Image (cartoon, rainbow, N blue to C red; front, side):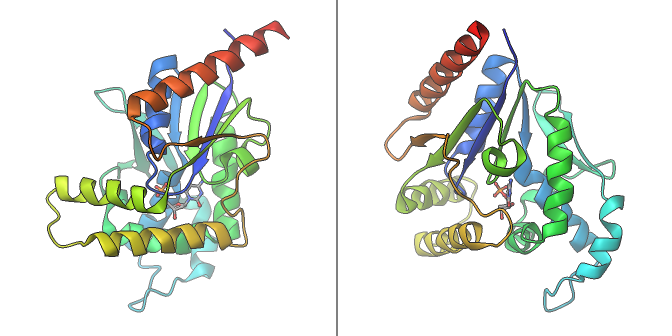
Length: 234
Ligand code: DC
């Protein structure tokens, strides 16, 4: 069967990484989490003290050092990709609240985006990948054979994220805080100048507000089959 590129974009906390990961596993493709790459650059900035005490970033230093930042993915024992920064496994560190709070700042910088996009395009050269993010179908792979734009109501996304935090033992964060944080990130993602989050004209829209994970997977696999079998006939 012909290998394609699957681009999955959408707002934060809408379950798109879970879907992208499961689709990749189901069809034997490589999964790339592009958000993890922006998180890894942010972690580099924290580790190398590029942020001062007021959280101002030294963009000049980052510009000089961007070529020293090596990011790649290696499969763990369960076959899932984990993020490495200059040879160190940083999969857990990049999910910290500190990184989450600073990553929007780093991912808005044009030279950071250009470096990451070049790396992502290289990773997708051989096709057979599912990549998720914000600009995959619009900037990274505008020619992707399958593009999905995932959306869900903000209050439903906030409830899911809140339930997830509770299940991980967070007893402090309130639902209102989660909703506010999510709306702020939506706003930043959509209004930044460089590669803002937007739906590609030829993307398939999946509103998963009222869908179970199984229903979403069924939807994705059906679309994937339609596209790969149609492509084969050409
Ligand atoms: O999907 P995520 O929450 O792990 O993404 C982390 C940050 O990176 C988030 O602020 C959005 C940004 N991002 C981006 O700008 N472009 C991408 N392709 C993926 C993520």
